[in-house]
Image (cartoon, rainbow, N blue to C red; front, side, top):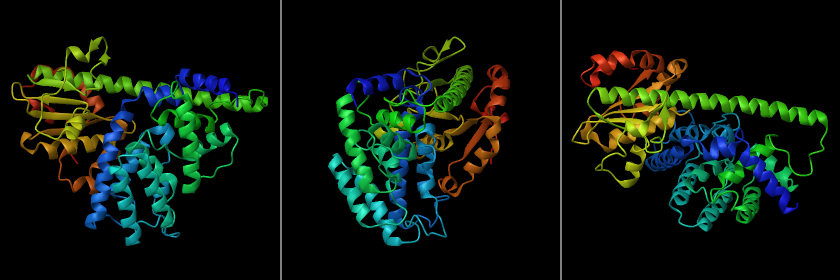
Length: 416
């Protein structure tokens, strides 16, 4: 393929606001938050396996938590959890009932998590492959990507379809050897075109995903039959509607953050937006004019401080830096990672007696209640309440006018 053709394809991919480069890779704060959440979740999986508390089913496990954080990334990672569902008739993937296989999987994750060079990860992949664990294939790469995004590309059906179509190959999905061959080619291509892509392999994986999903025409196929072009137009129209919906969610997210900043200030607290949201604004009100520029120094490890800094809104007692309330605003997907950040906060700062809240769309009330009652959440013994977006929107002014402390939120907060 002539180099200019691929350059043109990459340019089309990057310029289209409906495709994953702009909608997921660049302009998606939840993507950045996911790296810390997934890393923390993998640590929990390793700990559960070591302690013998990892269950014999995917449901309710710490691994389900990790894969839920992965699939929250929407387009590129949709369906990433399916290979890990326990299939009792087939007894796969064989990491739930077979104790040796469970241990091998935990050791693999731990070695990859601690790896300081890509050769170590490849060696561990080959070691895991040698165990021949039924049903445990390269789907794991979607987890590894969030541990080492410059070493390990994600992997799924759409990505491999795009790879085969772009490079005219016939690679298959379920083999680690096939995955490593694909990875080698992707690394070579990414090195050549890094100046227009990224060190992060998610940019190239997104390109292959869009080709595999039929949202980008590869060079040489521009003269395809009219029926194929009409199909492409329909898919792009659908994708555009999805992006518009995501943008509306982001607007609602900013609105809820604005209300929380406003109420917190009215009640006499210092307020802080997540560090990657400080440049946001709502209805002409910039968060940087309402929020502290950053959180005060907290007596926690640097990694934990990074996580706390990503919580959507926190209220702090003036002059002390003690966190009084913390809020995670949920949209269509991010319940799991939001809960994880809140539990990290309260476990790291037990003497702050922080009240934790999820702010959720009315349509997700039952879902949030179900998630808050999951065994993996209940075992943390972390009380988390939730507030419906409609209640926060309706009662914002009244809470500002008549409230005298954070306890005024109890009038609209709900428990499970």
